[in-house]
Length: 612
Ligand code: SF4
Image 1 (cartoon, rainbow, N blue to C red):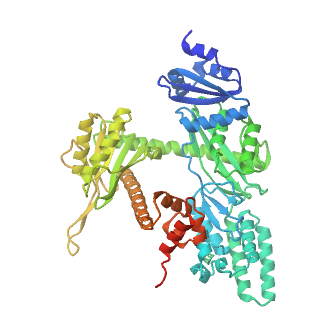
Image 2: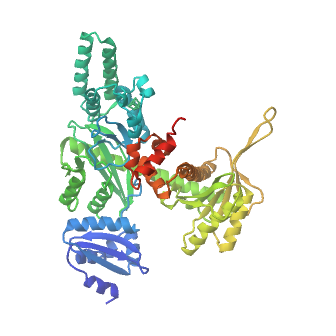
Image 3: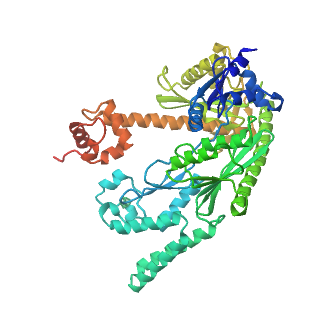
């Protein structure tokens, strides 16, 4: 009996979590089961029924760990924690785990605000969404503000105003900061906003109509005209919204589609009966049954900080459905139902979500085929050793040598893989020495990559022949072979303003080509390289600005007597910016951790010097 079989034989039969590990002890897969031994055993039986990816994983398994739990619910939570900790390669991963924007109505405040957030907190605010596009949400917010005048300022500003801001002058805020509106009247605006966001438009319209009639009866024609405009705006919004459900319950409808070893899950967001949008996710199925993939998706998708609707429609029941409901209810603080609709409106909605999942996969396959063609064309046109499936691109950002930083972005199969992005603070180079900085960044990145055998197919630099030479030097020093190297020089203008102006195209420098390669301006190959180079540039600039801002902020705070590094950090953590610290009243400064009455006074006096 081989050691792995022996190990399986000794596994417990209790509920819990199992971890597949490779020879180096790296966790390959984390799973949970009602009976650990039984589940693990099933993996190693009838291997002919498993897909290629699962078989590759099983070949790598050298050891198995098991953790027993009292209940399956504990196993569920433990599995989730272990996946978060180890990021196992073979677990179903929700790669696009970015949070969708939501609207937050802070009803717990005396004068609430409406803002866009990406995280749902366990506070007493009301959350609406998620919205699949931040741009359309900003438009919605703009529209809501046009209909309902709600304050837009942050609390520190709100508390310190002596006069209302421009929004008041423009009629976009009733000026609660300076007592221009009664809290009860402001509450009424919030109430209407809430009704609008909850889709109770018919009631809202009736309410506004009554208000308008009353205003005209009392000869308040200006106010009545404002109410009439509000009614018109709301009617226009309603016309545009597609009603898909006759009840007003918030629900996510989870579309599911499988083709060979790919699974697509496509949630549609239905809020107050209206379809707000949706989004697709693809996964390799890992040989797992549909139910398992769906269950794993739901657990990752509705982790903390996400909007959880009251109802989730799924195409088939999942293992431990009751447990999942319990867990979601606990997180939402309100009953959540997971339903498998059999007929009627809900079933139709689910069919729509599943159709969306299928269409999503078709579009994705087409896109991927195009991308494969593009990468092959790039290899051929630029005489590369490999197809550039993984590309790393670098850029340097500094201001006359000050606060210099380097950036590295990574693209796989033509798409950014942000978890691989890296920043570098330049440590060894002084002054504006671009080549020296590039040398340092490349050496630091690839010394480590060589050690970890983590090299890309191609390296792309922002620059010309000089940058390319620097990179070649680094490659030589580290004995890096087979990795392609290119640099992309920006277009530049020649001639002078009065006479001939010509914009020269971008040039691609290649170590084996004496002359740079010029790709046509409209070439998709150039657009592809441009996109990667621009992303590296964007990433470097953003980081550089952050570093500089931090330096500037610190240098302002450093001037205040008695405010050392710890207090500087606490102040920034508490207020978020120097502007807000400047505006804060003395009492607010005293509330900051680590501040004493004396140090708070020192900060206050610094920003409010006494007139002599
Ligand atoms: S008027 Fe006052 S309450 Fe309204 S947005 Fe301006 S500062 Fe805030």
